[in-house]
Structures are given as structure tokens and as C-alpha cells.
Length: 459
Image (cartoon, rainbow, N blue to C red; front, side, top):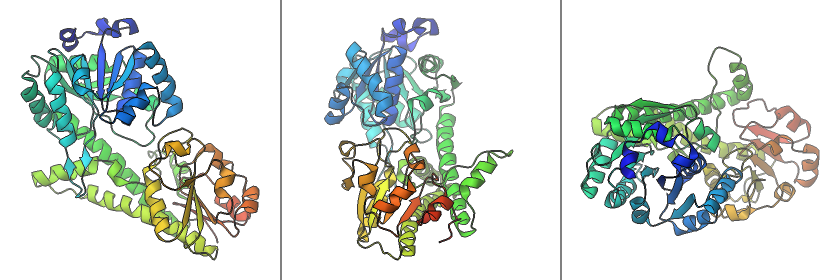
């Protein structure tokens, strides 16, 4: 059956019943991998998620998801029950039974800010050791220019003894990791599919079109496709850095950045990105580009500048909280600060924002007492955060000197300020990092207000 997969035609998988004859293995079970698993299972394929972490495998086998639970868990449970979804840490056995292997293993950034391809190389060795003749390998990770036809292809061919385009297919179709990535967004993502040979290109495109509602863009120029993924990611990263710069300007110029955003939407100009707390190592594109540029002796300035800005915005956010407390006549030492809105995606049960841990650590180092709250999360979902997690908003803000809103869930747009005045330790501050509160109303109720990019506070 794998031989057919390398030469698959649209009419052979044009309904769920036909797709059920084929098995897709996905490495690994992080966000991009698991979202793909759900989409392919919903499309009718048999799906195996492969991860070296036995705890992750155990959770998935029970239909439990580490993020976007309301979206993903019903799908997982349905397909675990039907037998169309399973998880394992036995890479060799899973690959040996697979018609398609989708690699979503991310590139890592080491402590010296250098790109580390060892995880992808190891995965390719494992895949190559068990690859079936006629199978199709699709790389969905964002990687450096030339990596698919270089490291990936060479490793697969060397270990398997097979040849790309003759014995098995190899294609590249990248998906960037984005905070707020959902099944809906991935399904609507018009993706590039690249392969050096026609069989691999056509087969991969046919497979991916079953989950890509807006279709695919095909190219036989793999290096250009790799560059597109890097440039798109860097473009997004730079736009956030630019928005952060604008936000800092607005704070100094007594302007509300979010009002600027709303006005821009009515003009001919494209919309501005939203300023946000960023943990820059979540985005690997700048590091990959800088690594590539160094090897080519090419000078890239924007990636370095954007990285510095995104590092500084976390420090600035810390300063906003400190200054808000000072305006209350308080210091960080022994101040009770409640960080609310921990989930990465607004109004969804997701993993915690990467910036939460970093900001909390900075505040705690200065003597603040930190508590956390999110209406979509429980203590069990926050094993990487050692701070007190409160079960309700009232419990979280009771006796607090400062509330910092990190993710703008709808619940926080309707905060009862009069009630907060009673249960918080006044004078108290509200620091809004997601633009969900109206500064004037907050100040009218007697609070000190600060907001990222919202230079309209008066106290």
C-alpha cells in the first residue's frame, strides 16, 4: 500500500472511507504535531502520534490534551475509541507501519543562541531505519535554507538505503509555531508544499489538500520554500517588535495605541500588530536566519534589533507594574500581585503563556508575592509554574495590591471594579497588558491604571 502512497492520486483518497486505508505517523506530539493529528483523523486517516515522552503518550492514549482542551480532547477521545488515533513512543514500529510520516520536530536554540538540529537529525535516523519503500515523508518544521535537501535527505537516504524520488517521497511543507494557533487557523492556513521531484510534490500536495481548506501552493524549489517560511516568521516577529516600539512611544506621547489600531483598521493601511509580552526563543526564525547569515558571511540587522526590542518589552512590563505600585505609595517588596489570564489563547483552555514564568520570576526576585488565576486552567495544567494558583477570581484578587492582566479573556472585560475596590488592598493598581480595560473607568473607581501602549493614564 505504501507504493501507492508515493504515487497517490486525488481519486484514491477523495472520501473518508478511502483515506481510512492509510496510516499517518506524526513526530512529535507538541502543538503543531497534535493539531495535524486531529485534522488528519477528522479527514479519515488512521493517525499515530509518536513522542519520546511516555507521560505525553499516556495522556494522549486516554484522549487527554495538554492544550486547547475544549477543541482537541473531544476529537482525540472520539478517534481513540474508533481506533483511528493512537500514541506511542516506539518510533521504529510506528514508522514501519506508516504510509506517510509527518515530521513536526522543532529546531532548538541552545544556551549560546545557536541553532541545534540534533533532534531533527535523530528523528531522521529513526525514520530512515524503519521507512517502508514507497512511503512519503513530509517535513513540517521550520528549518534553514538547504536543510531539507541537505541534512534531512542525506540522513534518510543513508540510513534507509533508499533514494528520494525512486524508493520514497520527500516533501517540505512548513507550519510556524504561533501563540494562539488553533485547529481552525491551521485548517485555513494556505500552505506551501515543496519537493524536488514531481512524484513527491504531487503526492504530498494531494495528502495535505485533505486538511487545507484554502488549498496549497506547489513548488519544486525547496530552498525558496524554506526561505519563505523563515521570512514570513521573521516578518511577523518584526511586526510585533515594531508594535512594541509604537506602544512605548504612545506611553510617552499620551496616546492610546489601541485607539490607533482601531483607526488604522478604517484606513487604507494594513492593520498593526498588537504589542505583547514576548519570550523571543519561542520563535526560532530569527535565530535560524542569523545562523544562516553567519555561515554565508551576510549581514542581517533587523533580526538582531527585533530580538533586542522583544527582550526589552518584558523588562518594560516589569517596570509598569513597579511604577503602578509606586503611584499607590507601595513597593514591590511584600506586595501581593495577581497575574490573571495565563492561558496562551484568549477564551480557551491552553498551556500557559511563555512570558508568565519570566515576569513572575522577575517580580518575585524583588520580593513580591505572586498568585495566578485563569478561568480556563487548573493547578494540574500549570505544572511548570510554582506559584500559588487560585480557583476563583475573587480568591486571586482578595487583598491584592496589583492585578496584571496578561491574556484578555472576555471575563476580564467585565470586571466589577466596585467589587474589586472592596476586596483588594486599596490604593491598588490594575496593569493591563492586553488592552481589555477602559483606562478612564478604572481611574474613576479610584485605581491606579497602567497599560502596555496606553499612555492615557492620569495618576
